Amino acid sequence: MITLLYDGTFEGLLTAVFEVYEHKLGYVKLLRADKHTKTMFEQVMNVVTDEARATRVLKGLKLKLSPMGVQRLYAAHLAEMDGEENILLGYIRYAFDAGQNIEDDYGNKFVMRVSEMVRMVRREKHRMEAFVRFQKLKDEIFYATVEPDFNVLPLLIRHFKSRYADQRWIIYDMKRLYGIYYDLHDTQYITLDFATNSNPSEVMAAFCEEEGTYQHLWKNYFHSVNIPSRKNTKLHVRHIPKRYWKHLTEKI
Image 1 (tube, rainbow, N blue to C red):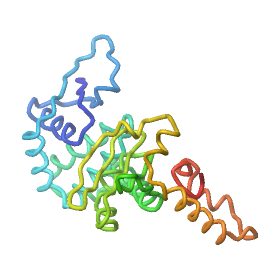
Image 2: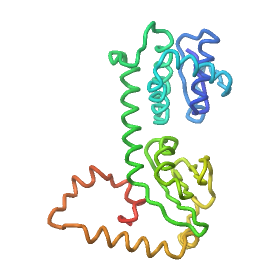
Image 3: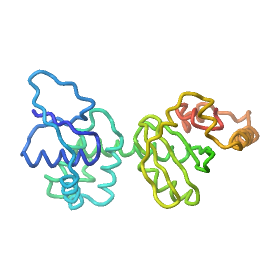
Image 4: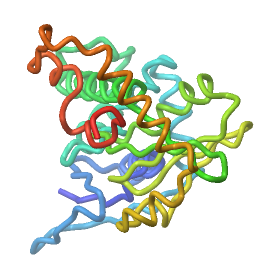
């Protein structure tokens, strides 16, 4: 068995698929390079991400899968779950080797697992759309931090670009240390030194003077609409898990 090491990107995954067919490889094990621990007698092949090769594989997938099927595959990849790379590789190989569309073949282990991964990623996406709380910076940019379980930032662009089309904003993933920035026209991926600043006083200095007042009003609103006699903590935590609370203004 040959171990294929790739960089963890979707383009890298597609390039790995190209290598499998190019070298007529049978049983392979796909791993992210940063997760690999070399063992004795292991045969390793490093996959260098190649945009041209990835594009060729993607074009082939579009002939085998529906547009929604390709989107679902991309969403499953964004789960970034350890050990699931081989599920994605198996799914793609099954799609290419089958004589018909395999998207609804839930009797196949690869199709079933990809479907489960897509559901988890989409649930996290919907939660992020509801739980993002922006804070206004001194330069008039609205800034929000998140720590999603899965890498859902690319899936949030359409929603927030449509909803806040007249505002410049940044949504930053503190777990993966990158964000998306919207400049009133386009979005781009960015990294920020500011986001990793551990000094609370310096972080707060970046926000506009009115931000504290807005946060106070927001907390008062939630306090005023709260009905203590109808408190149901178990139900509340089920809808808003505690891991999200530190990024919610009303919970701080």
